[in-house]
Length: 435
Image 1 (spheres, rainbow, N blue to C red):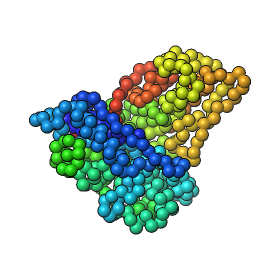
Image 2: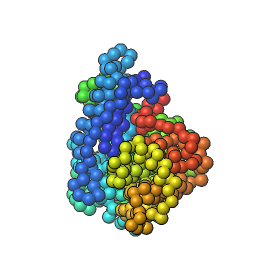
Image 3: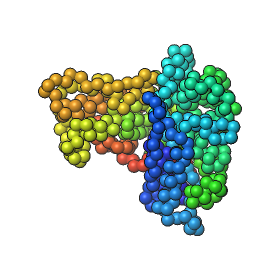
Image 4: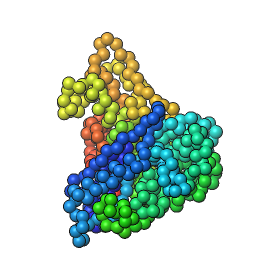
């Protein structure tokens, strides 16, 4: 069966027609970028219509690339999703978005997060499974919006995350997948695993706004005719809600307990499946989103993008193949007093307060190779801390490595000498919603 896979990332949408049995794309993968707005510091939002335009553009291009539109037994037979998480969408009584979509990069809710941590931090962690993290828990974003506009509560009729909203746009039906529900702040992940009256009341969220929570592989409805025409696919085909992008990549890798997923991006994400989910201030704990499995997730705030930044800042005269090849090797063996302390070039997604990096012990003999060596040392140190924070799961049977900068990470971490590379994991994982 051929499916249209829609992978909504932080700055772009990727789409492809995949063979569900093999997860292989038919034709080239399509991409459509979109911009995030930051009307004031700590904000990262996108108008819903802008996001949908990118989704539709990528979807149409993927159909063109596949060459299968309208062909008997070769046309697209279903649609599936993978998305950035969380991303809050509030709908009014007319089912239209009331505000731009607040992405996980939006940190405007720091004041709300401080308040929740001070009042009920320990209880929240024990029940929800995560700390009240700005950008990481959507109920905090909602509380912050209410602080700024108390009348908003009178307008809201539906509370969704972005795949729930896209699923609604595609089918007219509203749902939450299990993985996204764990990042709302009102789903009792660690106790009865349903919408919590306690936390709904605390955050002024009406339980009537919240749709049912389902497995990410659930068929939530049939594709509406108008949207089918826009995407150039058959009307009435099934749509699956999918789940978070990291979870989708884990599906693509067929992760099992004892395996480690390592995603290298702005920050580095490490994730493993656990049969004994335990909340901790040092990690995230949530449903995988598909099936009944749980995962632990940690972050290394010195990611592949930090290397890109230093390349552009200090080594612009050095070709990329030299910088990421022999120059990285030279810096790895460089002895230097310079340190990156604190090492937060990508921020820290597990902290409430903003974190900023600093190079220390610089003097007039310091050169750019010292800075690179310090960055690499910090990357290794924070990796070990993130690995330890996952819990007592190692040594890992399999290590699956994906994302920009993955080759550098493989060279930096000795235990990663033998890894399995994964390309376009969050996109390919969508095929596994159908198997």
